[in-house]
Length: 482
Image (cartoon, rainbow, N blue to C red):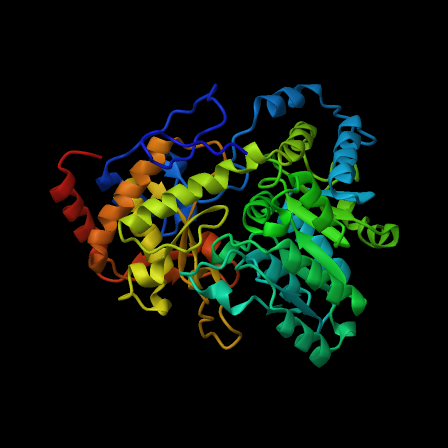
């Protein structure tokens, strides 16, 4: 990994790539941004791309591909069955993870569906360091229940703990003793806990979790969608791993697992996913679900062009110079916002910069969705689309009451190799401006609320006229500037 010092003393991330294809962006006036967020029901998922300047909603499927990935797409074998393209992918996965069996799927949540249908029964308990929205939905749909066993430090937004995604081993042991290993079909480890700021777990912690699981005959499952960031943090933050290569760390982690699944929309910079399985018996118990829900066993709902790109992307994930770019840009953005007094999750994690909405706008109560309100405000301030990761992303309890999230975050994802440093500085500037007028921001309320996954397509409206007032303040400070 390149560690570049500047004579000026400034610490900025240095892109270890050059841009050869560009896509034009538009920055519409703030008056249009107000219209657009209203038309979208104050849900950033429902914004149209033509109204967005910097799309920081997610890094899923929007990372920039390398020249080698694009070239590989031209040599694909488009056979419906027995494709040589699929063989190249399975061989690469076996080389990296050391597992002999692979089931393809069109993305990560499709893998979760297969795993839940195969392994989860009514009354089962699934321990994990932290849930992800679709993971939890698939498990509860099958009658199971999620138990989050994150260390207490994990939900502290301000911290210096290097591995806030670690399991609490004492809590895990107590759970197994209380409910019985026979009621726990698997333990899920999420590399780069998405909903609490992309926080990693350590290799040491993962090994301890897996040892406890296997002692009790419980399967271990790794969600490797954000593995590349977690690998970077293990190598840079875990002293025992500093002299190990990324490939060595990956194999040592994989060797602890019975199942590894991933979304290639994140891992591998392509679009697709799949499940790597150590046991033939376990693979056979799942494989019939692939042609039923995804596609034949040698494409699984993916384009063969994407499979070729994924194969190259997985190999590139073993390159520290490549996987360091995301975390370094995220760290820069977080550190600059902290200098300006803006509350963010620390230490900087993977996936993106996470604004702490609870501290940014403490006047907005959780039942008025502060992270969602902040997402709308940041879009107004700069045409920047982020993703709410708070109570809005939760689901109501069976009695209709709100399940309050442990944290209220606005995630500003930094897709890999997509944004320039000047664009990141623009985002920092507009967010800093917004922070000066944070007292103007109010809450949101639902006008259309789906029964599940409401953050995807629910519609809300502002409580009061705070958005119009924010637009007036913007014009007062910025004049005719967009």
